[in-house]
Amino acid sequence: MWRYLKRLIIGRPLKSTDESGQSLTKFKGLALLSSDALSSVAYGTEQITAVLITLSTAALMYQMWAALLVLVLLAAITLSYRQIIYAYPSGGGAYVVARTNWGEATGLVAGGSLLVDYMLTVAVSTTSGTEAITSAIPALYNYQVQIAIVIVIAIMILNLRGMRDSAAFLVVPVYLFIFMIIFMIGLGAYNIMTGKIMYHAYAPLNASVQGMTLVLFFKAFSSGSASLTGVEAISNAVPNFKKPKRKNAANTLALMAIILAAFFSGITFLSYYMGIIPSAKDTVLSQIGIGVFGHGIFYYLLQMSTALILAVAANTGFSAFPILAYNIAKDKYLPHAYLDKGDRLGYSNGIISLAIGAIILIAVFNGETNLLIPLYAVGVFVPFTLSQSGMIVHWLRERTGFWPGKIFINFIGAFISLGLVVFLFGLHFKDVWPYLVIMPLILTM
Image (tube, rainbow, N blue to C red; front, side):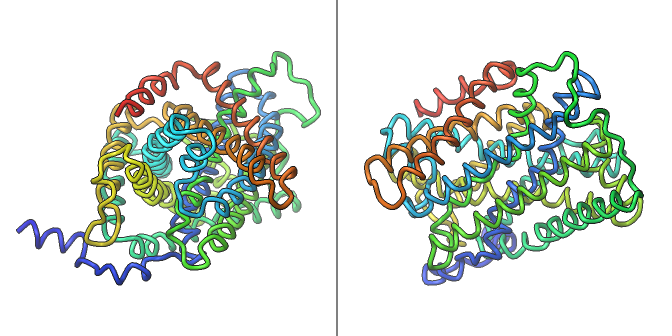
C-alpha cells in the first residue's frame, strides 16, 4: 500500500543513467535557484520602512540611502560569489571556502549557519507568501501558520519528485513574478511622468530629519539587507548545472543579480515617491500595486504572483540544503544518510530534514515574518563574512589573474557583511539570540 502511494506522490524510480537529464539550463536554473533572492524584494523595502517609521514619516526618506548601500553590498557579494563558482566548482559555497582557507572549525560555523539559514529561507518565504495571500484575502488572516505548513509540505513533495520536475514547475511562477514586477515598475514610472501618480514623499532626499541617528539608519540597512538572502545559493549548487557548469552557474548568478538590483531599486523608489507607510495587514508591495494598478485584475495578478514566488522561493533552500548537507556528510561531520540519493536521484534525507526544521520554525515563531527576518539575516551574513574573507586568503595564496582587484572586492563584501553581523547582534539581540544556542548545538552534533 505504502509503495503504491509513494509511487503516486513521488513518481517511478529513476536510473542513475538518467542523472544527466536532471541537470539545469540557465533558464531553469534561474527559476530553481533565484526564486529566494528575487522574491525577497517583496519584503526587503518593507523591512527598511518598518524601522524608519518608528521615528517619523519624514524618516522614510532614508529608505533610498539604505537601498543604495544594499545595492553596493549586492555588487560586492555577486562578484565574490562568481569568483567562488570558478575557484570551488564542487558546490558547498561558503562552507567549502571557509573550510579550505580558514580551517575545519570555521568551515563548520559557515556550514552550520547555512544549514539553519536554509531552514529559515523556507520558513520566511512561506510565511511571506502567506501574508501576500491574506493581504488580498483578509478572511484567511487567522490561518497563516496552517497555510504556511501546507505550502512547505507541498514543496517538499515536489522536490522529492526530482530536480527536473521541480524546475519545470517553478518556471511559471518565477517568470510570472518577473513579468508583473517589470510591468508594475514600468507602469509606475509612466504614471509618474504623466502626472497620474502624484509626489507624496514626506521629505526630500536632501532633508535633515530631526532625531535621525546613524544607529537607526544602520538598523534599517541591516533589516533591508534581508533582500540579499539567497544570492549564495547558486554557488552551492554548481554541480547541478549542465556543462560547462561553472560558466552556466556564473552567468545565471550575474543575471539574477541584475534583475534583483533593478527590482529592489524600483520598488524602493515607488515606495518613497508614493509615500507608502508600512502596515501590519497590508504589505508595502500590495500598497504600491494598488497605487499603480488600482483594485483591478492586475493588482490581484501581482498579489498572486507574489504569493507564488514567495512560496516557491522556499525551493532555493530545498535545492541548496541537500547538496550542502552532502558536502558536510562527505567530510564526516553529518550522518552518512545525507550521502544517499532517493528514487528520483535527489538527496531525499536532506529534503525531508529541511522541511521538518522549517515547520518547527514556523510553529515556534507563529508564522510571523518580522520575527524571523533578523535571525535569517544573521544566518546569511556570517557565511558571507567567512566566505569572502576566505577568498582573500585564497587570492593571497594563489596570486593568479588580477588578484589585487579581486582581494579589494572580497574585502568590501567581508567588511560590510561583518559590520552587519555586529549590528544585528547589537541592535536585534532579542531576535537573534537563538543563533548563539543553535550554532553550538550544531557544531557539537
